[in-house]
Image 1: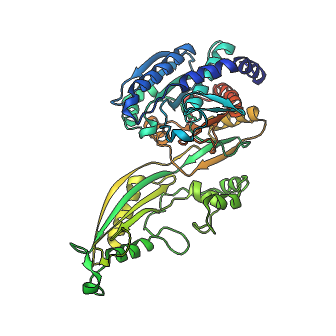
Image 2: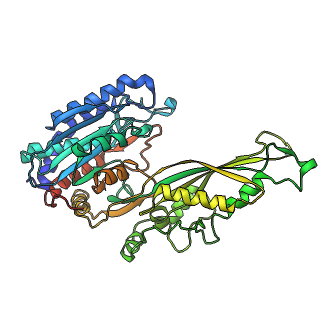
Image 3: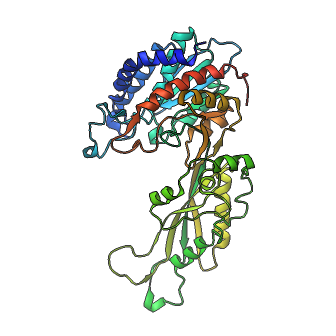
Length: 463
């Protein structure tokens, strides 16, 4: 197998070609949310299929889903070696507002070591790197050292409505020993990192009623229950004065942090002052007994996302509201179940509701949390590859948000998922002037080549 220096030489020689190819894909405005871009979506899927064939993948197919298709390809000629499933997406966010772009969003431009275009970082640039890693292994080693499967979907930016059905229906075809997703950021510009955990989410909407009509506050004030007052008291009781959620059973399934995990998180280069300044708050809050990093990566939350009722217009309208609403979301951690947590919160809200009101609960929905232990052989192979490519040991990080495809793959295919992204939080994905830092493109390509080779030593079926 080729060594790191051989890969460096190969990738340096191929860099101009790689960037030309990537720019061709970035020129296709594959905006999945806008029906007028249906032909562009088809063109982007066809481009991905052609690229799969060009790098040596077989059984390439553009597979219908009921929405935008999934592009599939594989190479399965490494008997007794593990199988890696690589996921990415070819759709991109709308580019609005166009006037804020320094260069047209679908006319890629390199400036100051950055590739500017919609999709450069999220996610065309990152899934393209996986295709080029497979090509490098073919060209230098003759054949990839592991079995490879690729799925590139076209609906990630509009909710992946059809992906779960596709993965469930094609579970046999997609069976793998490990999956890789490069749709997450590095912890910092010079901080190589692997994401080991994602929080899940569940949502609810409460509607509290105290009557059939709003009432005159002079005629009825002091005797009629006020829906906003009642709801405010109910919501205020959902946390105690230590920042813990008071819903019975809320923490029962939470996987506790180990001493080693807490020590590793404490050693990370986290700037609390900068974090607070970014928020713009005079002080931070949260659950007592846990650091900020622990709170946002590995502790569950219950947050109010919206609260309304009564008169909302300019001026004064002296009414006693008969209905009030609240939107709630809970970020979840291993091993919490989103449906169970939603039911616990709903049941608690009903218990807290006084006899002066009724409460209705709706709007439930969500996704599972995900965790791939850092000592898993695939995570260790990724860490070794990243250490060589970046010249320093990577850190293991978490993400407070959710990437729904990760728990979907874990739960449906029973495979661990390595989150091995190379973007940066400041690269403006979903915003004007999205870009990809080319130093991470270069080091990321080398990382992936070495990662694929490193997986060859993993036993098939390792979990």
